Length: 337
Image 1: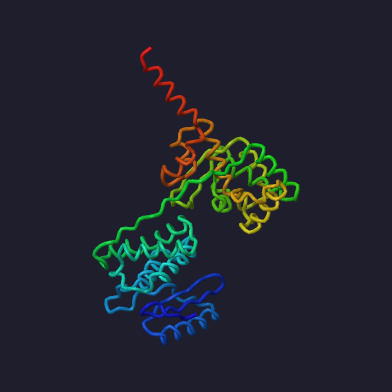
Image 2 (image 1 turned 60 degrees about the horizontal axis):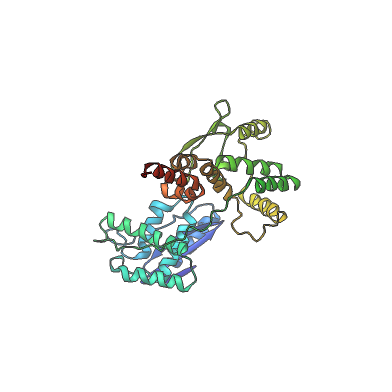
C-alpha cells in the first residue's frame, strides 16, 4: 500500500504478520520499492524495515523519516515492535509528516485532543505520547532539533487490582482439570506462586531451574533485568513431577492462544465470563498481593516481581493496612499519658 504522508510517500507491506515500511520523496519511488519488495518476499528475501532519511546528510527532516529511523535503530526486533509502530502510525496520521523542527507543545496538544475525540483512554493516549517522546528524545540527542518540546502525560487511574482468593484459585484449577487441561491447571498454580509473566513462564527451560536449591532464574524480562527467585514447596514438587513429561522446559509446547482459550473456558464455568479483569495476568497480581498481605516488605516484593520501579509495587501497598495501624500504635506510645 502506498499513501502520501505530508510531503513524502510511504510504502507499507504486511507479509506473514510482519510489517515493512519505507518513506520516499516521490510516489513513483514508493511504488517501485513496494513492487520490488513483494517480489523479494516471494523469493524469501526480507526488505529492510524502516529507511534512513533520504537527505544529503542522511538526517531525518520530517516526523515520518524520524519514525523510520527510530524504528530501525531502536524498535526493530523488540517484543513491542508491532505496538509502538501502530502507535507511531497514529501520531503521524494526526500530526502529518511535518518538519520535526516545527513540533511544539501546541501540536502535541492537538494529538491529545484528536485522541480524546476518538474515545481513547488516558492510558492509550499516554502510549502514543511515549512513542513521540522517544522519537523526539533521539532527535534532540543527535542534534537534529534544538529543544525537545515538553510532553505532559495524562493521569491514569490505578483502578482495582484483580487478584484471586484461595477459593477462586481452587475453582480455577479444578475447572481446568475438569476440561482435561491438567498441564494448564499446573501452570495456574505455578504463576500464582512465582509471579512470573505468562511469557516468562513459557520461555523457561530446565537449565533455568535448580530444584535442589529451590530457585529459578528468568533471563529475558520486560524490564531487561534478569532475576532469580526462590520456589515454594508446592511449586518445587510440581516441577519435579513434570521433569519426565516435558523435556525442554516445564511449559514448553504451550502457546498463548491455546492458553487464552483454556482460561476463558474455565472462567466461564466459574460464572466470571463478564469479569473483564479476570485474565491470566491477575495471577501475577495474586502473587504480589499475597506477599503484601502476609507482611513481606514492599522492597522485597519489588525484587521478587522484577518491577522496574517502586511505583509499580506501591500499587499493592494498600492491601496491608495493618502496617499503617502499627505505625499509629507507635505514635500512641510516644504521646503523653
